[in-house]
Image (cartoon, rainbow, N blue to C red; front, side, top):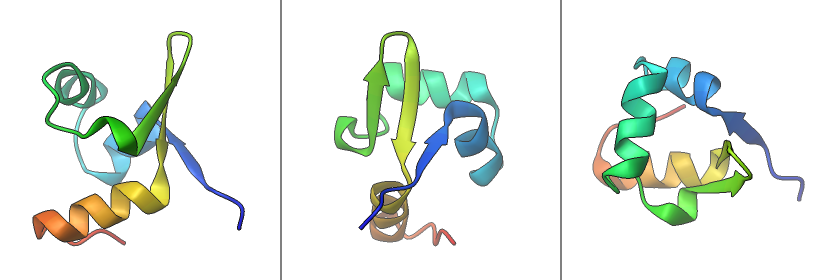
Length: 62
């Protein structure tokens, strides 16, 4: 199965939030580390894991 990745900007749009909020969530560990990967300075979110986490938090997700 091919995994779909979201940039921080795409994730912010998906969550109806700002990119700075997403970075703050990453730094404060409000978003678990297994949901995203870091490639140098770039952060990519694994869409399926993001959706699982949102569902488990009761926030829905698409």
